[in-house]
Amino acid sequence: MDTQPQPAIEKVPVKKRRTWYWWLLGIVVVIILAVAWTGVYQIPVASAIMGANKPKDLGVKVSDAAMTSLQTKIATKITGAAIDYNSPVDQIFSGTVPVDTQNTSEEITTWLAKRAGTNAPVTNVQVCMIEGGVEVSGLLHKYVNAPAYAKVMITRTGEKSVSLQITEAKVGKITVPQKYLTQAQDWFTKQTNSRMASIPGFSMTQLEYHAGYNIFKGTMPATARPAAGGWSDLLLK
Image 1 (cartoon, rainbow, N blue to C red):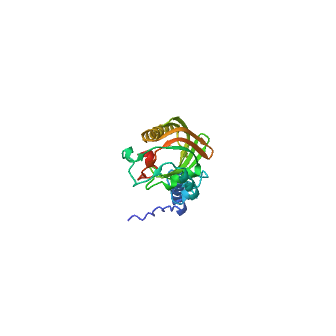
Image 2 (cartoon, rainbow, N blue to C red; image 1 turned 90 degrees about the vertical axis):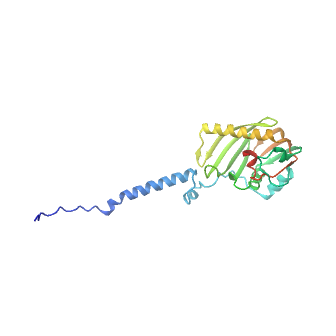
Image 3 (cartoon, helix red, strand yellow; image 1 turned 60 degrees about the vertical axis):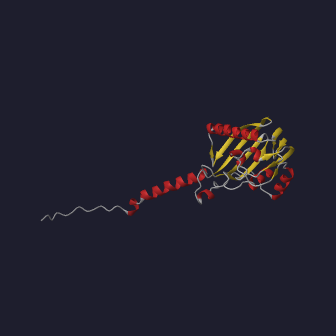
C-alpha cells in the first residue's frame, strides 16, 4: 500500500479569487455611466442623475397666456372632425385669408405642446427664434428614445418654398456627423416644400426670423380640419 504523503493543496486567498469579479463590475459600471452620459439610451437613475434624460432647455416656456395671444393672430379657423392628413387636401383645407403677423418663441412652443396629439414622434418641444432661423430641442420617441437638439437657418426662396440649413444637431450629447446633417437637411427641406406646395390658399411674401420672434406675411387657408395625429401630420403625412 502506497503510504507516500500527498502534496498539500495550495489555498488561494478569497480576496485574490474575487479580484476578477470587482474588475468586471467596475467595467460594467463604467459602460452604464458612459451610455447614460450620451443620453442616446435612457438608463433609469443614471441618466436622470447626469441630466441626460431631458432635452436642452432653451428658456422657452409653455403658457396659457401665449396660447391666448396666438389664437388672436391665427387666421385659419380649425373646425370640424379630426381627419387623417393623408386625405385629399381639398377635404382638409378651404378658402384663403391674408396674414400679416409676428409670432414669438413662446407662442410657437405653446402651440406645439397643445397640438401634439397622441403618439407624437417628438415631445417637450421648445422652439427658440434666433437671427435667421431657430433652435429646436425635444425628446425623440422614434427610432431612439433620447433628447435631441438642432440649430436650423431658414431662408424664404419663393411663395411656397424655403431653404433649410442645419448647422448643428445632437442626439443626446453626441454631435451628429455632417454627412447625416446633410441627409436630414435635404429630407426636411423636401418635405416642408412639398407640404407647403400642396396646401391650397397658402403663400408667403415675407418670412423672417429674429431673436425671440418671426415675421410672416402672405395667405393661409380660411379653414382647416384638425389633424388626427397632431401637428406632426403637417410634415410627416
